Image (tube, rainbow, N blue to C red):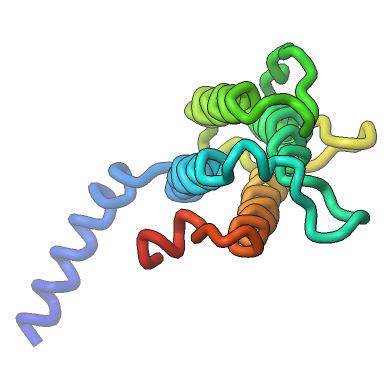
Length: 176
């Protein structure tokens, strides 16, 4: 009984310290996911040979280069801007037909914007209303979730395109 009371007292005293150390667990998790997705997507973009950036499995699908161009502006710049409440940067418009080095550089810049923009989000702000696509308003939390889902969706697309061209996606090479 004394051991149980002692453990409970220790937990109650340590609880506030643990809570203070982790005041933004959701925002911190989002930032960690941004770093992971940035690495995986950028590594995938670097893995695909330049002459395969025009590859698309079917005529109805985007080419590999189109996916990268889409991630830069429609994905990272707009989604991270909406989630953070910051204005998306103005960049030269890129298309999937642009050279690989230009697309990879743009992708890296867009993930750097995401890292910076998301750096100050706090959990307490996740219920705030922010402008979103189509002139509607969503909570910052919704914008965060849509952003993470977008990264996962497009990484899986890039991974399939890589495999269809005889290349392992980055997460397969690392055994993840």
